[in-house]
Image (cartoon, rainbow, N blue to C red):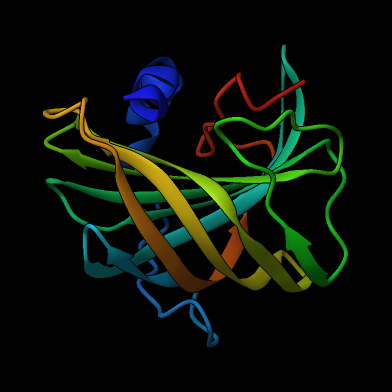
Length: 190
């Protein structure tokens, strides 16, 4: 499956970020408590929530603004990452996602990925083909917003079967800039 093969190396960087870096917040992502909530529909269906952080990651590949949301499950769980290429913190607004499989992201473009893990092992990868990210505010160390995207990918146990899902939710993320908590795949960075 094209989507899975293209993202396996990218996802390997993420697996280390799937646990242990949270602040313990388990809020719904749209109120005063840090966290996120998400619903997945389509070929796979689930609802989950957990911890959310945001920040500007500056490594050898360049700068990326990222919102990272991870399920607070000791055995693994889902992870959603929203990326904005370039180091600028976005202004409030609604942004279209660039196709994370066939697109050619440039400065200012947004991408989204969703992953699932079990016991520290990657089990599924999905890359957004289209959708939106809405930033409602970024101030006082908190980023708030919503996301809604259609993604393609699949289970690593069945790499020849392409699955399509829609991921929709909201976040209330804490600033993690400069921290090791955010892991952004080098493929996203310029």
